[in-house]
Amino acid sequence: MISAESADLPDGGGLKTPDRLRRRASRLLSQLGVPSDRLITEGLARVDARKWHYAVLASLQDYGPGSQAELSTRSGIYRSDMVGVLNELAERDLVERAPDPDDRRRNIITISARGRRHLRLLDQVLDDLQDDLLAPLSPTERDQFVRLLTRLLDHHTRDA
Image (cartoon, helix red, strand yellow):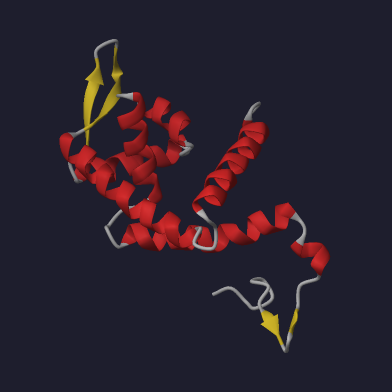
């Protein structure tokens, strides 16, 4: 649970957090990350999914089959964690593994028909969760907010 101070909630008629902290974008982004992550994690858990499942399925749907290393790069999931995520998805028949014809030591991962159906469900769930997260913003403000966040992220990860 977030404390009143960290959530900037009124306490005794006034804010506990100094205005100079409330004006810092870095702090605001950090503070928003906690409830955002909780909302997404809990929402996906209701349909027996995790955000990494979505990232892998979306990557496979949008960019096609790939190796574990390629999926790691595309999705931002550490290579050491990718095997576990793929095992979970394979156990649910959401992805298929096949030996790479060019390198038998490596597998090529493909989204299955069931995986595509599951991804559509996850898209709907995440759309609803995004609506909850961004409820105070108008549709125009939401689009602008996402564009600005994307620009910031692209700038700070360009050389990464």
